[in-house]
Image 1 (cartoon, helix red, strand yellow):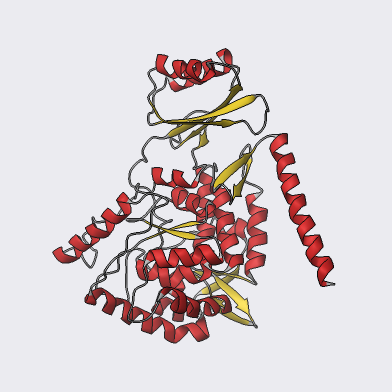
Image 2 (cartoon, rainbow, N blue to C red; image 1 turned 30 degrees about the vertical axis):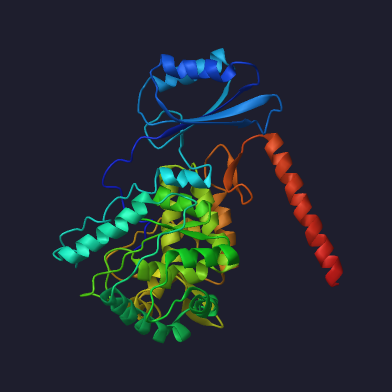
Length: 433
């Protein structure tokens, strides 16, 4: 199980962002804000920038934490009185005519990173640590770290106890016995590098900050601490920025080979190695970018594809099945089971895989196999092009922001960027031949 896959048990907090573009002139922002004031709409965030689509216009991005029905007439007045082009993005699925809200800048992840659906420091009655007061206090310490974390800060270091390290050791030793024969070659290539660069050993639980720094150097991914399970929409949105939300706590010592939730063993042993692989990192980000502004129906389909690939995926290498899913690579029992003759194995086809139901508390009865990460990426791209949203998006790694490609001018600018990359490719090719 991972932070992306848990059905909501409570409604998310209301959050709506409005992006409106108006002609540059004196007092234009004041007149725009007066409209919100007249409709008693409290704004929690305001930013401005030169419009990238109209040279004589400015864009304003405002956020409000409300479900006030007066929002609609305020938007109408922006259009009528200010001749504004308006885009509404809302975390409220009932907001009429709106696009589901999504983060535009990497620091926007701060707005939802603490909206966990379950677990954190609160444990269910059937959790192995439910009756252990020491473990519960420890979980609260980890939850507090995640709740207080903001983008740009170093991830606080944790002094793991002897009992926690012993639990890690049991899991680490069991799994590393199987990796040479059961894990894909990309995983086995990177895993030793985590030992050399991040201190991943049987007697040491690596620090999230060290792992994050290493990932940024090799693939551009980074880790962010999280207290528990996020919604699928929020978890996938993080991937769009090459941010992986990672738990920092470890499972209860009485059940070292079982966990009802993602823990640091699952994240670091299962996920991190392949996040360091450039092709796999791009595949993960592709799913994240496709989720931005997508409908709930598409979020479910993308999350299901993520489940059967990044979490429980198999691939063919040298005529044999190998595991690359983190849920397999962090579970000794299921890693053996998935390559046996017991489960059903099907070819990965996103249109079909995306609607397949799956259990979350037992071994998977069905696994999907890809011939390569590149093939899986191509198939996912074909699926993503079918998503019904009025714009495309691209990630700008220089500004760590998502750009909405909704005008001809933006497409022209992107074409110029692509032409520059093609020129570099052409030069490199000519020098090699």
